[in-house]
Amino acid sequence: MHVARRHYAGGAEWTKDDSTCDPGVDLDDMIEIAQDHPSRCSEQSDGRLRRVADAGRIIGVDTGGLPTKLFTVVTESNGTLATMYPGWD
Image (cartoon, rainbow, N blue to C red; front, side):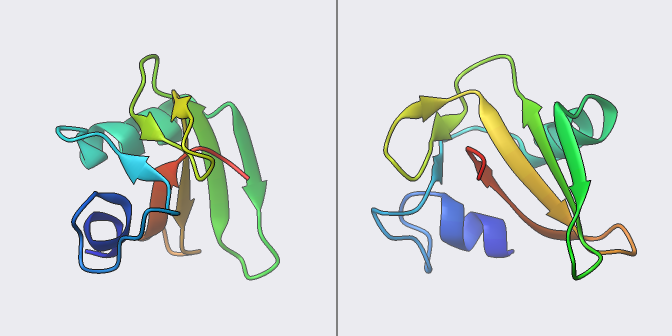
């Protein structure tokens, strides 16, 4: 899965400049929080839905390396997960 490869330290696509999930962060829990309690929700020009939510606890670091409770979930127009990551933009 893209998220695990890119947003967990040691993942095949991960770099030190990426936002990074803390070990043990449950992606399914994060998706559920974003669906049920988004702080912000917007449709992108490509039809994807972007949700920003607050996990209520530190879940990782953003691209600036700062601890964050916020995370972003992007789903395709059909509802499948495109990506998710700590922080928001």
